[in-house]
Structure formats: C-alpha cells, structure tokens
Amino acid sequence: MRWTELVVFVVLFGVVTVLGFVAARWKAGATLDHLDEWGLGGRRFGSWITWFLIGGDVYTAYTFVAVPALMFSAGAAGFFALPYTVILYPLAFMPLLRIWSVSRARGYVTPADFVRGRYGSSVLALLVAITGIVATMPYIALQLVGLEAVLRTLGLNGSGIVGHLPLLIAFVILAVYTYQSGLRAPALIAFVKDILVYIVIIVAVVYLPIKLGGWGAIFDAADAKFKATPAPGDGLLLNANNQLQYATLALGSALALFLYPHSLTGVLASRGRKVIKRNMSALPAYSLLLGLLALLGFVAIAAGTKPLINQATGNPDTNTIIPNLFAGQFPAWFAGIAFAAIGIGALVPAAIMSIAAANLWTRNIYKEYIRRDATPKDEAKQAKFASLVVKFGAVAFVLFIDPQFSIDLQLIGGVMILQTLPAVAIALYTRWFHIWGLVGGWIAGMGWGMIMLFNIPSADGKRKHFGASALKLGELNLFGWHPFGGSTVQIYVGFVALVANLVVAVLITLVAGKLKVFNGIDQTEPADYHVDEDSAKLRPVAAH
Image: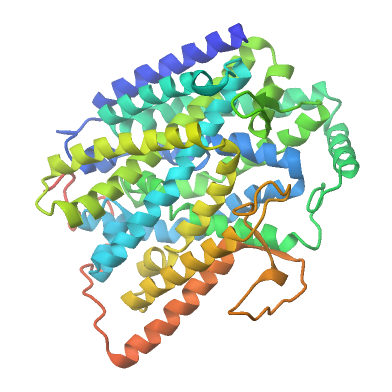
C-alpha cells in the first residue's frame, strides 16, 4: 500500500466530492426539475466554464491512460490520437454552431430531439437515441478502467469483489452528487481536474526526460524494444500495412467524437455561439498536451516500467503503465497528485456521459413511447434515475467482464456512433436524404460494421471475435466478391461501414424520390440555424 500517495489522492478526491454537492447551488436557476437546468446546466455556461467542461468531456481518463499505454505497446500507431484531435475542431466548428442555434431556438436537449424535429420521424430519432446510449455505455466503462488502474497502483489490488470495493465507493459518491447537481457538478469539478492534469503533464514531460537522459535516449530505448520484440505494426514508424489504418482511424475518430451525445451536451450547455467559437479556437491547446502525454509511453519504456498484475484476472494490466511510471519516478507526494489527476479525470466525463445518456432515454424513449404526457418535472426525475442506472450498468460491466476487453468495445462504440453522421451532422445542412434512406443506411452501416468487427481476431490469438478495429483489405467481402484479394493493407472498420451507410442512403433516397414517398415534415426553419443568445427567436430556458 502506497500510504502517502493514497492520503493525497483521498484528500483531493474529498475536495472534488464537496464541490460536486456545492454545485447544485452554483449558477442555479429557478429549479433543477427541468432537463434544461439539470441536464444542461441552465444553458448559460460562458467561455471559461465551457472550456473546462468540453475539455473534461473530450480528454478523458482513458485518453490519459490508454493512449500512452498504446504507445508503450505498439509505438507509432498509438499516435493516431494526435492528428485526430488536430483535424477534429476545424471539422466540427460550423456544425456545432448550427446545432447549438437550432437546439436553442427549438428547445432540443439531445441530438435525437433535433432529428425528430428535422424529419418528423420518431423511428429515426429512436435509432439515433439507442445508438447514442449503447455507444456511450462502454465509454463510461472505460473511465472506470482508468480509475481502477490508479487504485490498483495505489495498492488496492485485491482479487474478487474486495479489489473492486474502492471503485464502487467512488462511483456511489459520483452517482449521488450527479443525481443532486446534474451537469453543474462535472462542470465545477472540471476546473480542478484540468488544473491538476496540466500541472502533472508539464512536470512529467520536463522532469522525466531530464532524469532519464533526454529524449534521444528515450527514443533509442523505445526503438531497441520494438526491434527486440518484432510484431506486425509495432515500431517507431508506421509501415506500408498500417498507414491507411492510421489515417482512416484518425479521420473516423474525428468525425465520431462530436456525434457522441456527451460531447454535444457540453456544447448545448453553452451560453451562445461566441462561446463555442472561442472554445473551438482554443481547445486545440489540449492536442499539444495529448501529444506530450502520448510520448510518456516511450518514457515508460526507457524507465523500465512494467504493468502491474491485475489480481482479479491474473493478467498484466497495460492500463497501469502510466500510473506505475509516476509511482516509480516521482516523489510520493507528487505521485499522489498525479493519481488524483487521472482519477478525477475519470469522474468528469463519466458524469457527463451518464447525464447525456439519461437525457436520450428520457426525451426520446420514455416521453416518446412510454409517457407522452410527462411534465418537465417528470422528465427530470426520470433522467436522474436513468443516470444512476447507466453508471451502475458500467460498474457491472467492469465487475463481470475482463476490462482488457473494454478497449475493443470502445472501438465498437466509435463504429456505432459514426452511423448517425448522415442523420445528425449532414441533416444540419440539407434534408436531401429521405427518412427511409437514412434508416436503411443506418441498418447497412451498423450491420456490416458489427459483422466485420465480429470476424476480426485479436493479434495475440486469445479472442476469435471483436479483437481489433483494423480490417485487412484482402478480407473485405462484398457479397462474395473480394475487390482487394490478398492485400494486407489495413483500414478502419468504422470508415468502411460509414461508406456503406452513405451508399445505401443515397440509393434508397433516389428510389424514394422517384416513387414520391412522403419524407416527413421539417419543424425547423432556416433562421433557426443562425440564432444567437440575443435573438428574439430563442426559446426561454426551462420553458414547458
């Protein structure tokens, strides 16, 4: 047991817990019994709060734990996260402004609300809502993986239910203050989380290279490791087989990120378009942080860091690489601060994700199909309970399934959420696609994407299915036709599935247009996509 680190961790965790409960009265509106207030923080967050909220939402504990761990294990391939976050913000800049405006004008709380209003189709909105909820669940579980990696490194590495007890306690606390305070809790905590993360990473990328002989020595050590243990795709440089996979994974991840409901929740909570513009311009600063953070995977190689053995499974846990590096190289008191940064970094996105999933359940399933006459107070109460269910569903996942598998599930989540791009992102600009084209495209993309993922084994041969997200082009099967037979070049499954989705959506749209099939009623107006905080068209916050 690392007592000094544990005491520092518990103290900082306690501060965050207090902030979580205090948040209920921070920037409070008239009531928390409305999704505008509980689920979107009153839609009045300014530039600084939005900066920390979206940053805390996008850069999660999984990012801080898994990206450098992937660099440690595979080398250059793990660096895909850097170009992905570089291209993300230019791609998302204009669509986010439009979805904020139309949501503010029409009172939309979720992306599925927008789809319901844009196409007048409860079926299409239901598909978007279900996709968002299911794709978010493994993402929440990934935050638990990051928090558990820290707890195990602290010495809480027992077997069975005892080993998971600290995690359960942490998430009971999270569940209670999220239930009480809604989105204000992670928004306030994000201040502490980001400050801690910046301090830890800046110290790490300056102090550790000096201690280990400089970056030249670190890259030499990493190169020696990859050459001594040759494996497909490993190394300091990409090779001919994984370059396409790297590029499509970066692009696919960038397209997917702001389709996740929790990413849009942070945007919709903003006060106005100027706030979003400032944040989309400034948030790439996190990409610099991520690039430096990823290199810690190579630092761990030079330091001779080894993953801890997970006593619950008996296997080495690669997620403990960075916590173990900090424990071995930093003074005990500063290692405690680093552990708190990662642990609190898990709580912020987990809270936002559970709130976003709860909003989807409440607005697009419960109110649409179960209780159409639900009042705003009923909706808020339903969302609070749904957020508890989502959190503890994720805890159950970690308890009963080997967390090592969660990496693959995160990739599955990306493949899934990409299939909502035509119905959400493209629909912000045009209604050219037919409703049934979008439904057919979703079915084709989702179905083929899952089939491709199911048939990919893991590199170590331990799993026959859902082993990775990289598909060899030679194995691409179009109804028995192999257009790239024999090719070993790899591509991201989500990218292939999205292309299939768009092709099917276009074909069905053309046929439906010829047959003059009814295409729903658009409840939005062109002016809705340009309103700002001073517009007369704004729907009042917490309006019935």
